[in-house]
Length: 326
Image (cartoon, rainbow, N blue to C red; front, side):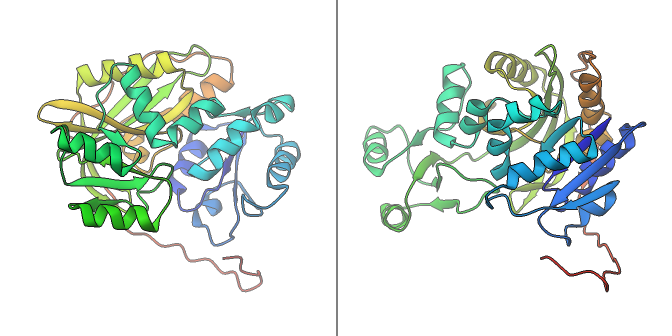
């Protein structure tokens, strides 16, 4: 079993986890920089162009052929839609893309469309407005008030998100930037969820819920494992109805005892190492599926009160005879 991990960057733990689980095969990692530390934990590193360079996906397909790859996944948002869009090309050469369908991936990265999908499926989510006029109308009707979040309709990594407390701030941001939306400010407890939807059965086989204690640059820095059965039930129903496949990362807020679904990333989340350490083994589930085996349902099969705390680490490597590609 040979796995290709695209845009590995600093996500060395995901590379290590797959290496732990693959007993007869290899993990190949790519990145556009040879200063991406995670790639050196793989069995082989392939330096590739940036994802926006013409012919990028052709190069990835070539690597799949050269290395006898069985499955491919990406760890960065901008590449997920590309991978989903080209899924048939990978399947044609015997490679399984570990990604949900293209339209669903695109919906995940359009926060307004995702909000509508949550509501259509009966889940609570923050109120959203695509323009100032509709927001002011809702504000006048008493449906919403400041503060609010102003963010790009399509974006990731919590970039360019602003907490806004006045009409003046709101108008200023909308004058400066295009494709913004206004979102109700969620002042509550934030949870992260790592869920796996079996690629053969379509059933959600694992759900790991962590309460976020501290965030940094849009990622979970400290968290604690918890069980919330009613929330897990809602997650299972939603992801199976919508048709997600493989690993997804979900952000949820609890406000006054109610759970509000915020967004979904159809990939390994930055906090997934917490789930793995608690025994929620997604790489093993992926390998089972690739081997033609459906996974048993193990939802809730982990212990409460296990804390994850991220800390800095460094890699030192002699590259004196290598041209550095930042």
